[in-house]
Image 1 (cartoon, rainbow, N blue to C red):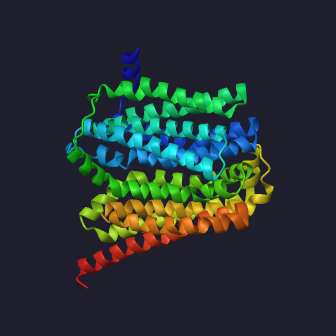
Image 2: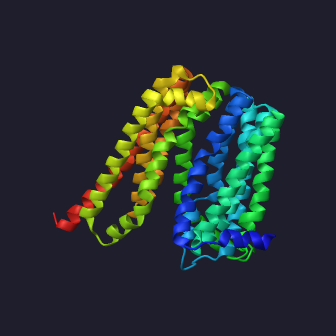
Image 3: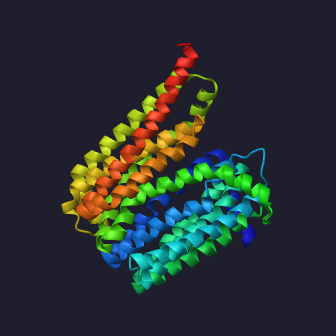
Length: 427
């Protein structure tokens, strides 16, 4: 049976086309996973449990970056194999252990400082373990991509995401118990990982970890800048949720997460548009074709502006009725907050785009400073915004943070492009 599954996962008539299609499908479902679960959860158990799940999912997504440690892109692009798979594998075991220890520490901290109930503690730990399974499977997926089979990796991820949603939702409908449903989701995720990712990995690598202390240090330093950037980026995206968890109620947490869902749409669509042309950006930079590169960057900025305006128009007209219908929630009072969040979503799309271009032109070490400044601002002002203004404060905090980050990244990017133009023209 295991061999049959491997054959099915590897089957394709066109690897390149299959990789593109499955990567798009997987990315879309990954972005929709929490929304689909919240649709069922809000209708079945109400906003209190929806609030607990929302913060659990947010914390799990933050801890995921500890498990992955920013190594995936480095690994999948390591075509000369400076590091062996065994070394990546050994590194991932260590980072996943660190991830679960950090998750446990966070939950203990939440219990003593925020009064987490036993159920909330368990649900958060289970969601962190689900994300730990994702982080662990990611090292095998990186190997598959390294060997030119991104399609196999994304098929494995897609099946796991689907089964997580199905198992959680079915068990919730049957039991109406959040802890049991989260446990079912965790078990399902682990079983699917064994039958897909771990099983398929046998065709691409030897499942044997090995990492010397010296090589660990080198790989650690390779991944550290990107890890810090990604970790801080996730913290910034979820900073309002952490503030709500600290100062407000589970019901408010659930409501904020419902109006926050559309913010990812602008970013997701923008990613689909510019991801296929990233290689072009890199080639133009290497060939020093700065005029063409600047024109493409300006064009992408216009695309993101257009998507943000479109998102705002939808939010201001049919956004609240659609969200209320989809999530079975009363959201009429939050039209202003939804529009503010959509502006923040547009700024998030800008920050992701600027970060990508900054990485291409090899200024990625500046990302730590940029995200660090924005994260410090979020930490300082989150309590002030959320305690005083509730959901409106959370929406404003998100929009302001993302705007500040976008401005900082924009200054770095365009200063570099301007300097490069002067150098090329001899001015």
